[in-house]
Length: 304
Image (cartoon, rainbow, N blue to C red; front, side, top):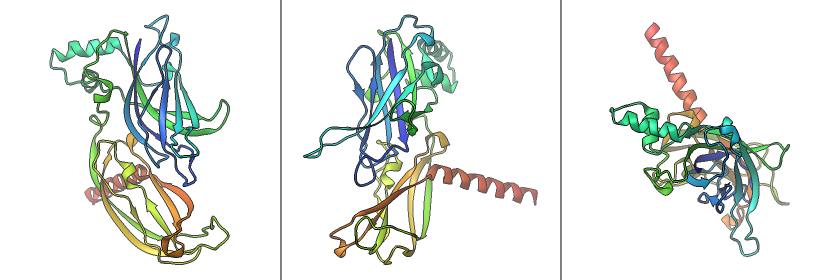
């Protein structure tokens, strides 16, 4: 059987680098050919891949999902340094076929029949363009029985080995069926509290870097990261800084990314900038909260 794994994104992956982030990529295993892997996303524990991998599986009963072996995904941190070039293992997701979003060949063929009748069913249109069903989240574990260490958002298509998709794997645009809306993000950064220096000296002038580029898919608009200015001294700096940027975000919370942020110290006029810590902002959830708030305000105005 030919299996297509549609890998959208991962979130909450472990940090493997000293900077508090990882350069992750996902490896998918099959039962016939060599290992397949996604592109590497640099400096991000919440990477957006939007990659399609094509695998081969040997199964006894193609019509029965229970006869399929599980889909296995490993996530690694890419290293190409002079002294450490071996990738760091971050976790494994074992996805049982009966527990995932999966479309079979018979569903593709049904969609082809419907398309001849000008069918507008979104499920059919998705299958005809080789864009799969709505994906699901599955957990990574460092080892069996260990705590969760991140998630992967993925869906699958299963067809006969000689089946020809409309598009090659690297031509599939997973973002095409996702609705995006332009948002203006305004952040008021009041300050930081109880910062702990990574060295023997106290915190000098801390500042925050916001990884804005990580919020858009690989084929999305080019954005620049932003950061606060290292002005206020000490471990409890008050910043009172406003930052603003525009960004297209998915309207469906399933696909909403998270914003990775890192706090650095500013020492010796910037010659040394050690990391103090990292945190994540759930931009997608904040967006949904705002939409719900506006809908509630609109309902109140209508009642008045």
